Image (cartoon, rainbow, N blue to C red; front, side, top):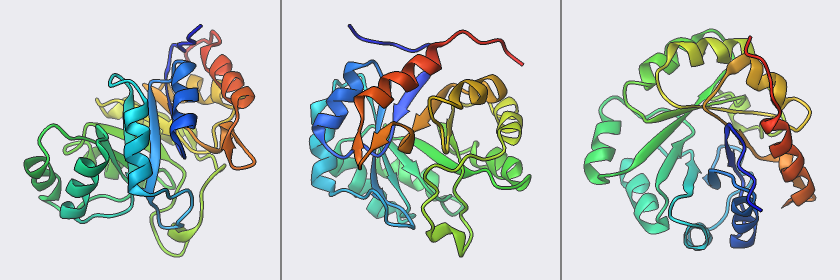
Length: 225
């Protein structure tokens, strides 16, 4: 039976069509694949991303995470893979969001915001004018930390709550979420959805037991703070 949690769940770091089908079978709203990150972790070929997109229902959100800021490359990635959402690791230059939309009509743009300091709120406000959703993550976009893999790291959820309250866009909370802490994170931040990677993986693979436990934790009743 399909398991549909009350908060939207995106499972990132999907590495194969089988992993995508497993995630979708338990009712996740979206799957994410990694094209390019500063650390290089989790990257899969463009051809595999396209195969994953073909393996899931059209109603599933399909995200490709990329650190590239080249609009021509982003357009090619969007068209070649068939994803419905491009998730940007870093902001584009002024005017480049609009140029991307002109080159790729219908594209849905999600922007990662690295919640490392109070400046993230101002950054989120500016970026929100150009994108369709924000992903509040633990990565640091500044050298030398931008080359480190942030998997498993949480961040200041109170700051993410301030961003969520200030921005009238879908907010996905990411960064170090597990079955043990996602309930608390949801109570504090109150996001539209959550984005999980390492918290549902074991030995480099999507783990069904961890996935089910995470979804159950998301679905538990909680009071709003």
